[in-house]
Image 1: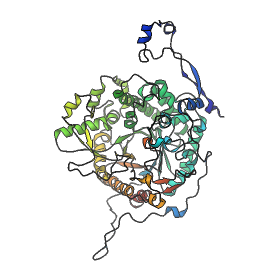
Image 2: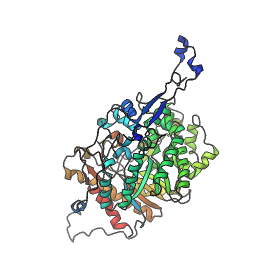
Image 3: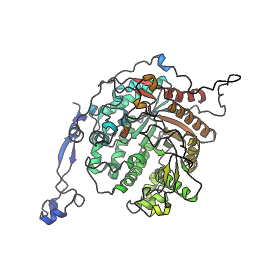
Image 4: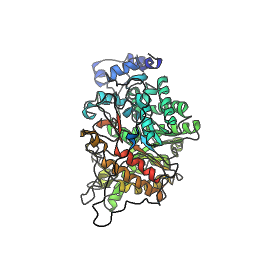
Amino acid sequence: MKTSTIATLVASAAFANAQNATKSTAPSAIANATRTQNPTRLASAFILNVNDLWDMLVGPVTEAYYTTTISATPVPSSSLIPPPPLYYPSFPTGPQSPTQAKNESWSFPKDFWWGVAGAAYQVEGAAKDGGRGPSVWDVLSHRATDFVVNNHTADVTNNNYYMYKDDIARIAALGVKAYSLSLSWSRILPFGRGPVNEEAIAHYNDVINTCIEYNVIPMVTLYHWDTPLMLQDTYGGWLSEDIVNDFVEYARIAYGRFGDRVQHWFTVNEPIVFCQQYPFPEHYFKTFPIPDVHQQFHCGQSVLLAHSQAYRLGKKMMPDSMISYKNNGGYKIPLTNSTEDARAVQRAWDFNEGWFSDPIYLTGDYPASVKQYTSSFLRPFTTSEKQTIKGSADIYAHDAYTSQFYFAPEGGVDACINDPNNTAYPSCAATQYTYENGWLIGPAADPLSPWLHKATDWVPEFLQYIKTTWADPAGNLPLAVTEFGFAEPFEAQKVLLQDILYDPLRMSYYHDYMEAILIAISEGVNVVGCLAWSLYDNFEWGSGFAVKFGMQYVNFTDPKLPRYYKASFFEYKNAFDVYQEK
């Protein structure tokens, strides 16, 4: 067993001082003692190794068929044949209808990077292998009842930890230029801090080197939702500013070990989403006395401090690097042209993209509406912190899947602001996916992704909004769509391979999304890249394996987990075959 696997850490210190130890234990004192009044009283010190964490806090995990790294298998030429066209013209009554001509006013620049994305927890598997420590998601999927559909876990998932060479070879065979991957924080630092797991360093070194071998640009995300369990149970994870120093030290290790070959970095993925996961389910994690409604904003504050400091460190260590974070959301369309709906739309922007974009790209601080709400429970940023936060991104990176309509909640915006019990509070913006007349904004995705509709018509306007609101004021920063994709409806219920591989709605989504980016570029938006989610079917968080976003099918019932290209992958690739400058 390697040293990193059995490295130990003091998991809980005896914080109680002599005064606490001798304090009266009369019935009245015991009755008044609660964990929030004196959470360190009667604490105990004990030593845990990585296996102890798994055994005590998570439980048994499933092992994969492959438990050593496998070599890439050559992709047969028969697998690289694209499907027939998605749509056909109607039967002609006269001369044959001509095919649609190429639009000569559109083009992707030669250096436009297009690629695919995945995330460590969702694809790697090898849950305990190589000294990895558990993350909060190991507890959520193993112990929190019904938190994940069908109680699926990511113990094995795509087994990318051992099959990454084949995965990279397969995307390279289709000409993919970039691969966005995330590192597992608890694989590199099994306790989130302390000893470095050299097995993990060696693994990620080879992943990066394999990308370079296949002429695929490696793009690395430091954090994609898998908070080390030890940090969550020590101080509340992102609920505490204690995480800032731990995250920056983790970033220093990653930059130092991989920065000679990785130029594109993302610090955190979609803080809006992972902060809104707080509070975690009760009884599975150590609890902390922060009101549930405030927890996401404590998380957001820690994220801004951690991201900005990691950014500044990265620019010192890797001056030529591109570093950002990944925001997420969609275009916010006023349901009507009323003043009240306009107010609601602005608050929707403020409490979504603006929550992190205003501090990083504009002011160093929150939008006015967010600041007004949080001022009663969040400390203000210092002048120095604002200076560190402002300008801490080299690009505007956005995960932009869909769009929706926003409008004032019943009773109006002001009534909502003054009523904490309103379901729309504190953003006070209601939302729906239908026009006023009841028609959908676009086709719905799988029912397990009710937030997602094909709203590609709104992408050019959305990109223009980002440019005008945040990227141009920050100095004409480039934009990138760093995640977008579609869950083909009911795909998980299909059984015929040919039926699974032909995914017409996802094909249409990628076709129209690429056209939308081309339109935005032709209108002057500096879009420099896009990353499709995802390179293959994987563990989709709370939906487990019951919803499919992949451009490759993975047969999870076969222990060898074979992969197959779907038609949508060819549709995505075709946009660049036709429109990228050679």
